[in-house]
Amino acid sequence: MKVIIIGGNPAGLSAASAIKKGHPDWDINVYEKGEYISYGSCGIPYYVADEVKSLDKLMTLTPEILEKKRHIPVHLFHEVTKVDFKNKSVKVKDLKDNSEFDKNYDYLVIAVGGKSNTIKIEIADELLDHPRVFRAHTLVHAEKLKTFLNSTEIKNVVIIGSGYIGLEMLEAYEAYGVKDITLIGPRLNFRSQSQEFVQKELDKHQIKVILTARAKKIEKIPDSDSQLRVLLDDGSELITDAVQLSIGVLPATDMFQNSDLEMLPNGAIVIDEYCRTNIDNVYSAGDCATSHHNILKKNVYIPLAPTANKQGRIAGEHIAGKTVDPFQGVIGTAIFKVFDLYCAKTGITEAEARDLGCQVATTMITNNEIAHYYPNVQKMSILLVFDTESHLLLGAEITAPSPLGAKKIDVLATALAAKMTIDDLQKLDLSYAPPFAPVWDPILIAANIARKKLK
Ligand SMILES: Cc1cc2nc3c(=O)[nH]c(=O)nc-3n(C[C@H](O)[C@H](O)[C@H](O)COP(=O)(O)OP(=O)(O)OC[C@H]3O[C@@H](n4cnc5c(N)ncnc54)[C@H](O)[C@@H]3O)c2cc1C
Image (tube, rainbow, N blue to C red):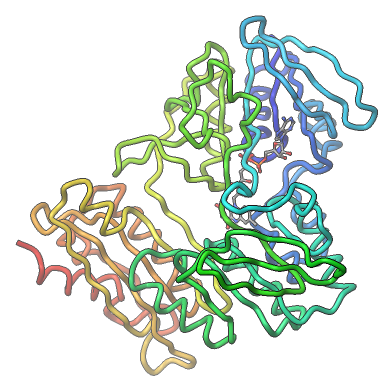
């Protein structure tokens, strides 16, 4: 059998490895348009901030290891430009010499990932490559930014987008002594009062936050190479030494726009629980594909690394003909860091719960993260979203001074997966010792308070 995999990162390589494990004799080819494979984009903010010193550290596998140990050929700088689903063939462009060739497949895995969203803002194409306009989606973006910050002193930067990547990137600019940082976005990632804790953390670092206007255009300033103008939709403008674009991720599926491949309106490829698309023998996984949301009960686009790895593996095992457990779906669990504040969420928001017709209520508590007498004790917050009729937990958010508190989100994610009620949550046997938690774990306290609102 001939298998072609488009994309050499977590989803594509997980699929390739699973297929090869099942069928060492199959002919598998991975085409990757970039220079790097198997890297953790998640480490980009920490690489730029120089907490991770070298790019190599972000990579798990090299093409040499893949070829030598797993016998999977990876073709770097090879972009798949077209797929002919009828004739089961792909057109590949060798980006080094611009030559092209066609290659047939029996199975195709589309693992092309995502791309930075640049359509939400008016920006000329050539400005995307401007030496002072940055994105943080690929290692090439990361390298451009780190090289710039190492060689150029800047006084200010405007970060457009306040999702988790925009928030994580703040730390990188601060690490280079950039004093004047402006963050523009619709909200501070959360959609609840958890945002207040993020705002406090940003205040500590003197970040200027604009949540009341959107950046609508970026333009060059005539006769200036060192400054750019950001125009906002309230008529104001910012003159800045650099711009960071972090306005979300879109599936990198433009080449399938007019094909028979079923996609969501944003271009995410619709897949089933075995990562099959609507076209026979064509699979997809990771940041270019949908996942099923177990609470919202619909296909969603939540591009995160654990999903990419799991879906890639399931696609590969299914292609290899193994008996494979279907993908269990997602519930929106995520975790991120804003300077010294550790944030996490799982499940659905109050508004989403209302849209589902739930009798929704919320409880927000702040509590010591560890025993009150233990050194460096600080407060953490937990927000619970729940249904007052069924008592079911629906969602949760945490902000905490350390990973210890934020990782409690996994208890709540597990509770959601197990369809636990607030009553169940309140009875959990959670661990205690002074350096780890108060004797009443904050989750138990939050559940206890939530119980008072139950019918
Ligand atoms: C800054 C940043 C921080 C992140 N932090 C986290 C985090 O903390 N936690 C988390 O869960 N997730 C995080 N993510 C998301 C995570 O990195 C992705 O979910 C994961 O990388 C998706 O893997 P993938 O293989 O689906 O896609 P990608 O990693 O996007 O890989 C797709 C690959 O396909 C290649 N490709 C695309 N088109 C073609 C083509 N036509 N031909 C050949 N090759 C092609 C691309 O060059 C790319 O290498 C972060 C992402 C970024 C950018």
